[in-house]
Image (cartoon, rainbow, N blue to C red):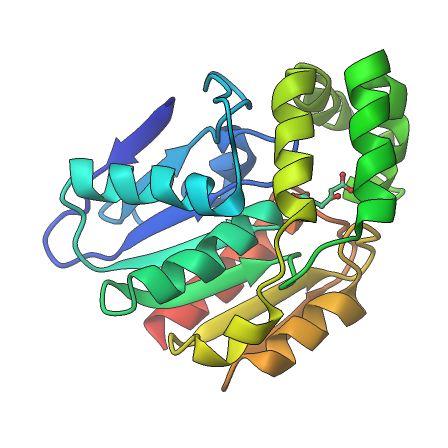
Length: 248
Ligand SMILES: O=C(O)CCC(=O)CC(=O)O
């Protein structure tokens, strides 16, 4: 599995990131660039995305297994988990699997249950039949606020999305469809920051806020002028919230 690891220096914190559907580890580039150099960072391309090969069966649980494998491979100690959308589902699992090791949780533009079979099944069918480009414009409208879609930058993320293998994308869609962690939210004990792009129509702020309400003590912050990927569109604000959460 393709990944990047930078160990923390001394007692500096380590951040473990998990990406969203149709993106790879570069989605965190602008956040990592703003972190202190001493902080540890572990990022990866989930199965069927970026440079990571798909695997025969995939679920949120197997995606979480992959992150645990990397944590153990590098003997990562305490870490903060940062998950975006489907990556947020993975981090919700990891929070419960590694309660002592995960010190803080950051959930961006995610929920305990995202969408329904009525949304995911036609999307899977279309992608497998016609490719991602067939639904690319609709996805990008959900990902970015209108002003951002006029920028030169926008084409970069469109390329990332459209280069995602259709089979890998469809497998992750099915994994999201089959996951519902609503009943487990109350068991999350880490201090949790929940971020939502104010213009996110993939996981709208009301849905994200409802998840936050289920996690004891979670702090909910809405980020203006951002869609589904505030880490791309509003990296300054995203990083400020992240650093504030970790530094208490
Ligand atoms: O981004 C994700 O991980 C899943 C949510 C989604 O459907 C994103 C999109 O609108 O394409």
